[in-house]
Image (cartoon, rainbow, N blue to C red; front, side, top):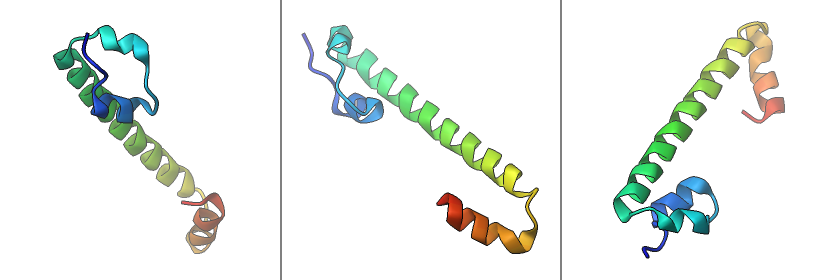
Length: 70
C-alpha cells in the first residue's frame, strides 16, 4: 500500500490515512487538483475583497485594509 504523497499532505494540511488506498498517480492528481482549487479560491477571495473595498472612499481604503490585515 503506498504512503501518502508529500504534496497531498501539504495540500490537505494534515495527513488523512484513508487516502493511502489511492494509487500514487491518483494521489498526485488529487494533490494537483486541490492546489489548483486553493489557488482559484484565493484569487476569488482577493477579487471579492477588492470589489468590496471599492465601496469605501479611496482615502480610507489603506486604513481599512490595515485594520482588516490585508
